[in-house]
Amino acid sequence: MAADAVSAQQAQQMPFIKNLASSDRKARTESLASLQSFLSSRPSLAPLDARKLWTGLYYALWMTDRPRPQQALAADLANLVHGLRDPCVETWCAAFWSVLGTQWPHIEALRLDKFLLLVRRVFAAHLRVVRERGYKEGGDDDVVEGVKRVFAGWCFDKEDEQRVALGLRLHVLDVWVDELEREGVLADAAAEGNEGARRFVEFVGELVEGLKRCPVKSVRQRAADSYDDERLPWVEKKDGGEEEGEEQEEEAGGVAVL
View 1 (tube, rainbow, N blue to C red):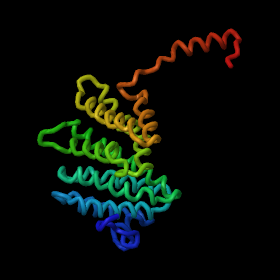
View 2: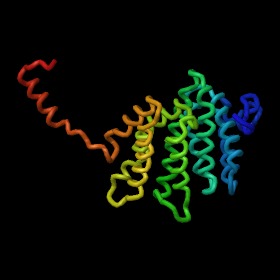
View 3: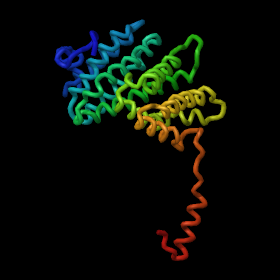
View 4: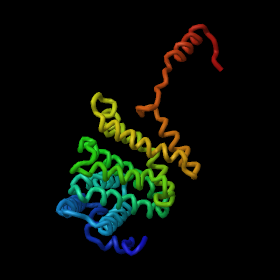
């Protein structure tokens, strides 16, 4: 990383980082509450400060042992965005992808699962922010537009293949439809009269469709596969009724299907 880097050794000396990674639940809870209070009090957040904080949080998860504390911390870190003031949301979200994109190639295989989970949780938290705002576009509330800019500039950026590490990009393409469904965004888009949700899902779909022309073959394939997921509103649902009927007839007649 550049001048805004926080090394692993430095992170271990930061009290709130050490406590977030502690095996003592009380210490973790108190440290998280302090961090939430600090972030919620900020009327604005400089990109450099956001990256430094996220680098420290990255190392907090990096140092956290055992599955349950790792899962809890991943969820807690993802949910920090909900306590931010509006002007800080886009900066905070972009800083996460910036830091993870830088660190991703250096994550050891034994530590990878907890960071895969963190990415899933953070992506879901971005969606919850948009949903809580009613998918509101433009006007005085720019939070939704800010999240969309983060999606376009980081998660599904088609202009700069080097901006987000390949493994991180592929993981986002693996989880985006799952999280749209899990967070209720797809249901909102299917509901009559919810044009904002429908346009938001279409917006994300267009970003993924753009990656179908990516020079990297694995990204093209993953984007194409996920874009054609049957849960998405533009994908024609397959009717298996006729085929199932034919199979039942064959079974009833004792015909072996090779």
